Amino acid sequence: MNNNLALSDEILLSIEKPERYIGNEVNAVYKDKNDIDIRFAMCFPDVYEIGMSHLGIQILYGMFNEYKDVWCERVYSPWMDLDKVLREKNIPLFALESQEPIKDFDFLGVTIQYEMCYTNILQILDLSNIPLRSEDRTWDDPIVIGGGPCTYNPEPIAPFFDIFYIGEGETEYRNLFDLYKEAKKNGTSRADFLRQVSHIKGMYVPSLYNVSYKEDGTIASMEPVYSDVPATVDKVMVSDMSSAYYPMKPVVPYIKVTQDRVVLEVMRGCIRGCRFCQAGMLYRPLRQRNVEVLKKYAMEMLKNTGHEEISLSSLSTSDYTELPELIDFLIKECGDKKINISLPSLRIDAFSLDVMNKVQDVKKSSLTFAPEAGSQRLRNVINKGLTEEDILGGSHEAFLGGWNRVKLYFMLGIPTETDEDILGIGDIANKIAKEYFDTVPKEKRNGRSIEIVASTSFFIPKPFTPFQWAPMNTKEEFLDKANKTRKGIMEQLNQRHIKYNWHEADASMMEGVLARGDRKLADAIEAAYKKGCIYDAWGDYFHYDKWLETFDELGIDMYFYTSRVRKEDEIFPWDFLGCGVSKKFLYREWQNAQAGKVTPNCRMNCSGCGALSYGVGVCKEPKTGEAVHD
Image (tube, rainbow, N blue to C red):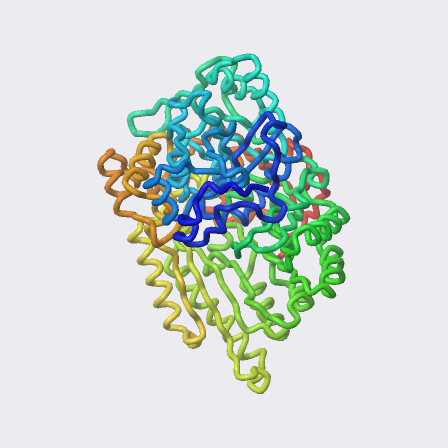
């Protein structure tokens, strides 16, 4: 425990939520600096409440602190009020546990979950007095390493990082720490250390690669600087989830955070193959945790945290084969203790509704469907595997069970989309409302009525998906489609029961640029940051005008990254990375999408994506060979 706070009482009393910065939470880890060799600052480049809800950080924090020679601490982006104070008073950014400057650490590890936090990464470096660019750092600065989904196209932020860890964090960090200790002992130069790091599986060192461009702005080649540096970097992955490290004592925050509950990761990966979903491709193949292991983890974590809710985490919890047994166990164990069970990522079928009835006896929260598209044709384009019949059948069962609130999620701007597809959004919302009135007689409505909230986000093509070749809509096209959706809903018979929300088009455009960007964007990210752009993921703080001005000044055409169609043989900025799914498979899926052809899920048939080479998980299961409607 640490009582020497980096901020004075006067500062703490002058800012919002001082609890974000004082550490000392339940299960936070404290070590004697004299007993360790490596200090690691684990950073989530967003506000505390978001960062504290991230499972990946809890896993690595717990795992690193089990090593006798490592002390892992945490740091989050200071909110705007403290950011101003730190700059005015020249107080260096500090870690929560020791309250000591980040600059004094051996490593700064940044988890990069979404593109719109790129300027926050520069905020962290800047406030820590660490040079923004890797080339300007010495052994007096921490080694800056990035991990998380955005590292599958790290090129827009490549100059700001010394290393990117490609893949799942449980596997290679021990090798990195041992190499670091060896380098420090032998007096190895920083540059030579980084070259040695490139020999560890999954480690990408951006400074060791040169990129050349064609006249049209696309990439001509990306070559390693030295012959011993690998030309491609493949992801590293946990092969046995049941024996992988999992944190039994996650840190419990003082204040309400986004996910205030025990999180039980039941599996990793997904069998579904939705063509827009990057996570579904990156984390292949699906690997499950043993149900007995999960039962033990659940009880242990509830005991060690005092949380009153447990959530099952995965990309598609309904596909966990031992779900009925796990649910029965949790209902039995948690029911008496008044612990809530949260079940996100369930498909709405008879089993799921039965389960939700059991766990939500009193409070019937909203049901969530993600049809993603307004017509069956377009759902086939994205390989969603959800029919209108499924949606209406699920709604019918739910209304019989006492639910009367439905949330629907759609995307606008999916390739091949027509006006008919867009108008289908209002149509399906209206049919759900009609289903309610047909199912629940007036006398059983208890003065309540159906509430439907339809939300649309704008489709953003991502690397390592079949849509990485696809053009993205312009801001004007997006807003026109949102307007058509709104009009379509207003023309429905039950429109007064349907509420419509849509996402910001400006932020979607920016995310689209960064998602498929190359190294040329690094200068723009740094320039935008210096103009005051941080917390771009927060609508109130996003300055689209400053970004446009920056692109203009640097001669960057944002539409080059968003709106053009890519040729089959174009070299993408991320092509030197491997996530286990081949480019050939992704292109075949891009062609299937344009033809509206459905690809079966991994439990039905193997579609030859490449993940079989790992020889684990669902790839080893027998295939059913039959079409299963979700």
